[in-house]
Length: 182
Image (tube, rainbow, N blue to C red):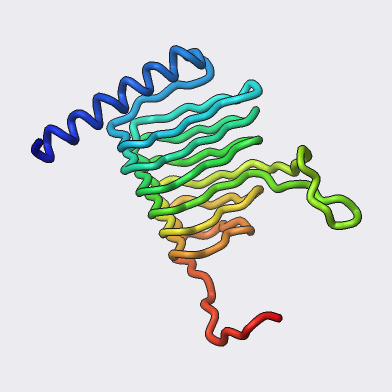
């Protein structure tokens, strides 16, 4: 089978999956208008959550988990392989934003008891807003409460736990001296 035929089959299957998910969840819970979804699209919506997806492109293995929150993905967004969005509050992604491979977005953390033990079913949440025309590099982790303004580029491997209010290029400081632990 030629590449074009295989790609057409992938697009048709992705469109059918969106139609089936929309029928299952209902139009008020899942609204999707994809240009192209690659294989292994995974969308899970629970507890009154909702997902709205504009005209986007996803290469493969895009996972969206929405547990009571609201996910809004604007048009022109591109997700490379293996990205995931995990939402219990709200995740907003502006137009024409690009995501490298393996980007993870979490708008929640497990709550921790006074003795330092993670509480299994208790979470702390805060919305995430990612502006338009941003580029998020491979394996970036974006944590709860972060707001990223328009026109920001984030270098590969960064952990974003504070908001970014000025356009520009942001990279993580690299470890230069590694030492054995223990």
